Amino acid sequence: MPREIIQLECTSCKRNNYSLMKNKRKHSERLELKKYCPFERKRTVHKEAR
Ligand SMILES: [Zn+2]
Image 1 (cartoon, rainbow, N blue to C red):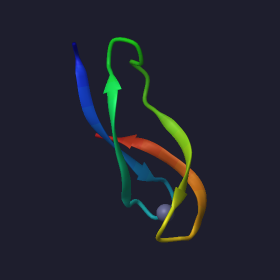
Image 2: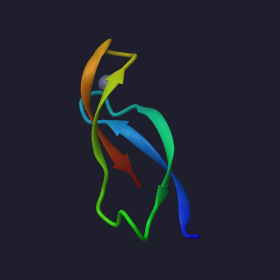
Image 3: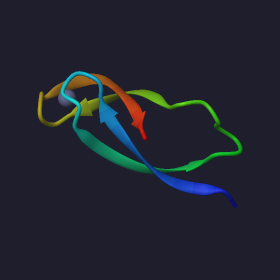
């Protein structure tokens, strides 16, 4: 199974706040999620870091 651990990077402060497992076969596009950033203490867009 082509599962990989990916990092989610906050697009406004560029910190890696989350890591998660992704199935590359099911989701080939770059992830983009609204997540809570603990450094800014608000919800921001997080993108898959490479
Ligand atoms: Zn942030």
